[in-house]
Length: 76
Image 1 (spheres, one colour):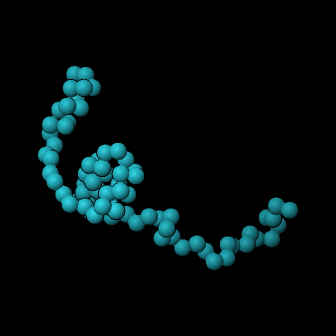
Image 2 (tube, helix red, strand yellow):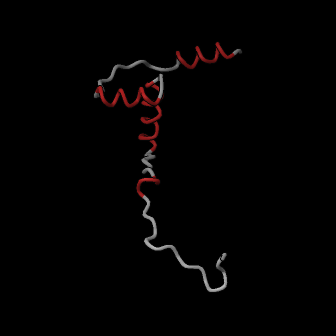
Image 3 (cartoon, one colour):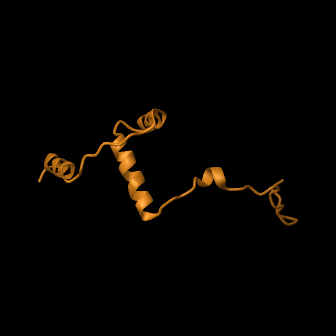
């Protein structure tokens, strides 16, 4: 089998549906990729598996004051 045969088989294994999306949301998805169906499919798969990860970069709290190293370990 060549790559063209594999891609045509995977395309025929999928069902085509129609959904209604907020135009602003669709613009955000289109900004990420030229194929919004891949983004939507991945999001639905993650949702069905219960994989709702928070963005750790936005939600983690930083220590207010970094710990001070013990005496004698300064790099002066």
